[in-house]
Length: 265
Image 1 (cartoon, one colour):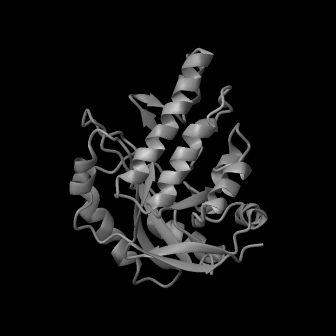
Image 2 (cartoon, helix red, strand yellow; image 1 turned 135 degrees about the horizontal axis):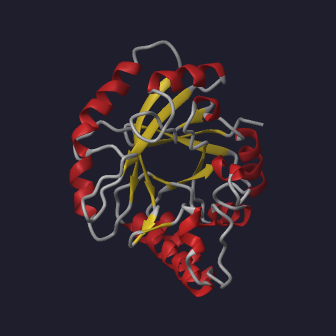
Image 3 (cartoon, helix red, strand yellow; image 1 turned 135 degrees about the vertical axis):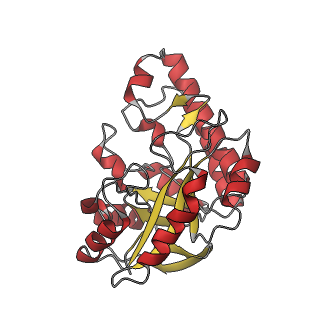
């Protein structure tokens, strides 16, 4: 069974409608398609243009529920929600009562610094870059402990544009992975990283091994923003997971985690 849960549509920053993404998924042999557009509830209450607004959530869910009646892959309803540790109650209240199959937690911003924008890194000294990397892993640990999420997105996103730490962050990374394991969250093997300057999926091979050592479940995700990418590099991602010792992936339905054999090869 091929499941692709991390995908974006024109409800957010994607280039195609949910229906167009489902048609593409069917042609690419995807059995279960999840739509997980962005929900970004910044502390300053500014909603970026590529995020759903809270007042759009009912319409977003209704659109995906209608899609379930169409012939094609099974449709799962998700959100990718940015984590801001100062305001967990706002996220909790906004998500309350929504009939979601899963919630992906992500860290894109640290006190206003956007970690996946290349220009932002260029303006930092090396020591400042290292502090962003350090704080990123602290944020991942608090994300895990929040109890709000099912999946951790693109685990080492800070490498996206090739800016890697020059200091040893073993302690911070280990603490974050331990928090993920303690919270019983899944981590995605996000194949999109292979198509950015980092030229590496999220997470890296050593981090996948570290997840396996902690028995952290994994899933394959394309983080697709256009139809052609809904299962991009799944075979390559599956090979990385197998090398680390994974034999199963996970999928989600009604916030329940379900195990399935790792099959793309």
